[in-house]
Length: 418
Image 1 (tube, rainbow, N blue to C red):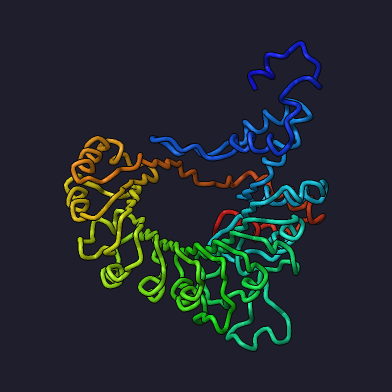
Image 2: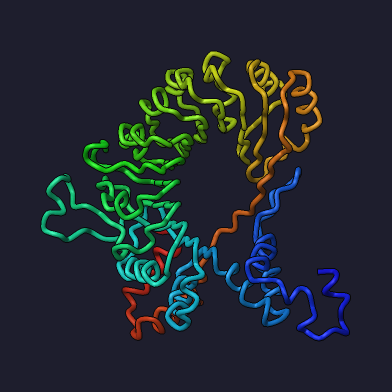
């Protein structure tokens, strides 16, 4: 780049940077679009740098645009409509999208028009590597769909053969009622390596005999709900599964934890569950553990896995941490090799006591990772009673009609109201 900038008198054909193939430019520009992790902060990537690069010249525009649209996170209704309109107007953009996240409101029923819109977008893009989507989207209306289940099978309406190379799938329940596991998931996405289920309550346990296993699955996570517990036997049969994450009180799959090959467990519960003391010491294959302070501060030395070597503790904004408690808890881990702290929110305790924590780790002979600080600002959205949200005109433009009831349903879902 320095050489290119110094050749101002040369013609474009002689400029070295213009002779680089697109593959090299893509690799260079991708560094502009990744998160920056420093010893003090986690800085999330910004699209502004990619935008500037795309405007430099025609040769840079295409690779920069490809990276810009590789990962799409749709957080609002308006953004979803605009993205759908763009895919229809510019078909060449469809093959650029690799990572797609739809807006979700856990526990709030998604309006049918939005579900159709989500389905339409998924079937427009060519080949996804990662997908985060609301579930269930639709009921399987085939005659024999309900033969093996208490309730009709619920599926993700993706055309047959589409996104067959999908590697990461996260499904977020839009209802708190028990549902059946989407049986088409394992056959349509047989190459999945990571599966996440948030707020999903399954109506019955899964077995390897009833649902084909995912042989490439390496990572499974469950947030709230009973999905992990109901999928216990099925997960145990997945031969490559080694990483498990449980958030917000998700019910633990005890067979998988005590008899499986789980090497790393993330356990982030808002409050301590005494039942953890009964199964965590029996996780003999586990050498890595990521837990919240609310759990770490309540466990004694005998409650940790015997083979534990790597430990991360998450400290949240609401946690009340004292150095004496922290010292007592860390002193109980005599076999640790590495230790780290993940600060989430606005809690400054770890930052203020970093020197003392490092001195304690050095005394114990434990390597301490740099503090990982993920600060965020919780900006709650508000609605003005006098002004109409800007996405309402978009609804009319997309569906070519005005319907006060329909607009109200979309508005309630957009604001996360049940």
